[in-house]
Image (cartoon, rainbow, N blue to C red; front, side):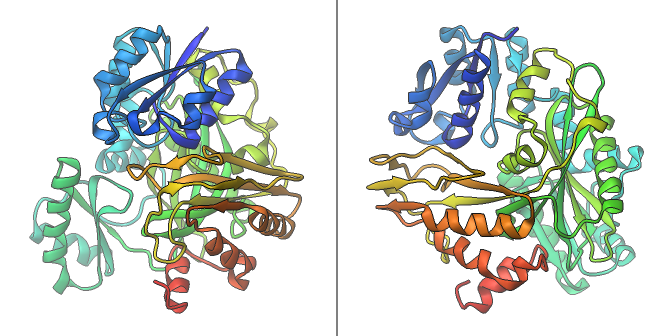
Length: 450
């Protein structure tokens, strides 16, 4: 049994976890920086401990401070949320070595999937489809040229330890390969302390499809279907939905089976996401696995009825999954819009004091947020302040419900990306499901806003 969980995060994901704890009868401990003293997660938790100054490196990324907070609060488990230390295997090992329960996959699974070269090796052995390219690390420009010629241009050079769009360069011809290779190595060394890179064929019109998986400590692994995550800017998702409007039943069965195979290859425990790129012909390829809960997990919860955060906690405590794959059914359609405190078209952060906050409501509208009237958004962290999720029987109805919800949302005092969502939801191509991962940036360019 888990009695008290320290939530090693902030913002809406911390609020989400604390609410799950309350519903499960588990006490919660919030940690906060000096800039987050008045944050919602500190108010909702049973206890709150200050872990340092505003900069994340001195607070939310400072493992000794977090472990001290866990010790003085007598927490017996740690939930890392997403971002910050959520995919840090060293942190997981420290939590486990301290005798506490780590609410997440094993450090070994995190290490394998966190290293893109090791992940590709594991996926190849498991029979999961891979993008054509190097089988492992590429050590020199000469080797890069050979791999690129075999895969065919364009190619993409990727940092093995990369993420969030960093350490990635697209190369359209051999003339640009040398500089891209060197730049990628330099950026990877600076950002991740590891200059290992590999090369893949660059897919020109793919969609980003991800499969939610859930595993327990008894060897059971299930999928909870796919999510459509192609609407991105600078590799950052803006709007997600489930199921994908592009994926047919035959392809769904194949890609979800591949997701389970990927998770099984690393004996995965907890909630995780296997990400794929899918071509217009519906061929698909593994790109990475996120070994944590995802920002967009609510759309999966809507269409399956499975509380993913609750089950993260239950499987960490040793419980077996209470359902089989056959028992998990899809119901309707769900859409999530990320609400950011930023200029809607320049994408510059807009921190400040919220003079008025009125969330939308009504049937099948969910709001996961961490703000309130009078709250001051600090300038030190990610600009996402919440997300709106709607559910309906059909995608068309779900879009209309989201349009109504976006119109009802009122946030005064700071600028948000509300208008971007309003325009995107009205776009005919979006409404028809006719988009790929380049759609949003191309559309913004056409608007003269990007």
